[in-house]
Length: 141
Image (cartoon, rainbow, N blue to C red; front, side, top):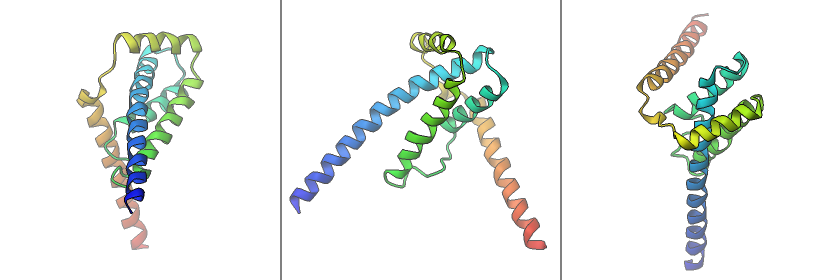
């Protein structure tokens, strides 16, 4: 029993270290994405995909809630990097490098951006409203 507890603790320690490193990398890539979106030198499709990634990062609502062990953190560790990678893949490499240098010089603090938070909150309220209206509409027919 004691050996099993030790293995579980070892796994949890490794998991938490991996999460901390991933969060640091993610903040850096979010900074790059932020500056790419602000550059005004990308097509609309790329801007929409990047905005989706940034919105997902800022959103208090996850596809899989964080309180679900491992899976809750994995959605952030898989979905968000995938959205960022897809966005940055369609951006000229020189612009990505330029924005990476800027992200190092001027780290972005998005957690204090109340306007972005308000827009994301309104988006989720709108989505919930559409779902509720659809359910009400379909239940009447």
